[in-house]
Length: 212
Ligand code: B1M
Image (cartoon, rainbow, N blue to C red):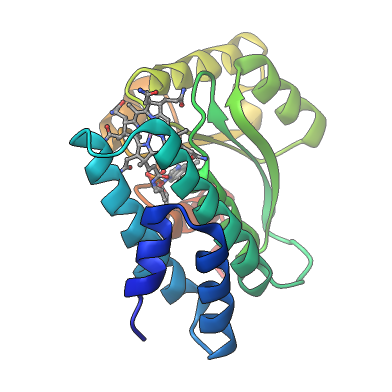
């Protein structure tokens, strides 16, 4: 399968073209995972490089991100399936001040596909909202995503607030996002770090003691 056109549609921020190419590829039997990793994500990587070099600007990047999320919505039912969740609940959000949600959405999708129930808290989630979600949902795992070196610092505020509220022992904390590292996760007292969505599933399984 040649993904050149799909990648270009993501780079150009062309939703109609990207959606129709996504549908066509799926109709032709392309596996959703391959479509994401070989078609959509490489397109977004080019957007990231051009943005860094000042060749693309925020509105254009936003268009590409919207295209990406629209295509993920089409792929989602095929990845997630209809099985009842059995493995545990994950309250998942992008931290305060951060609007990036593509990575979080991918992590959430793969977690759901692996039998976790995901409570998606969205973007720009402050510690109060994270704490409320843990309390009200009895989630076993709290997952935080950050894409900015400035906003990843809020992850520590959430861990500290969990401690202050006496909830730290009740929930496992996992973190991720491009600027986040294992060392940072350890420093802020998280229970685990995952570099990508597939590893996030492995980590979540490990955190709930799922060995199946
Ligand atoms: Co922004 N942005 N952005 N942006 N943006 C980056 C992140 C940046 C690296 C671009 C660059 O300079 N090269 C840079 C950050 C620099 C830094 O701090 N280190 C940047 C900047 C600076 C900004 C603004 C400040 C720009 C401005 O306004 N001047 C601004 C900030 C807005 C804000 O958040 N307050 C901004 C805005 C935006 C848009 C809104 C236009 C748009 C986001 C739209 C959206 O998400 N709906 C956007 C985008 C699209 C990007 C890039 C191009 C792509 C990010 C992405 O989705 N990657 C990005 C450049 C790049 O990454 N190459 C960039 C794909 C995604 C699948 O990867 O999110 O890393 P990622 O997720 C991975 C893993 O990290 C991991 O699994 C995922 C799947 O494998 N993972 C987890 C993620 N979360 C996890 C959680 C886990 C476990 C694993 O456990 C819970």
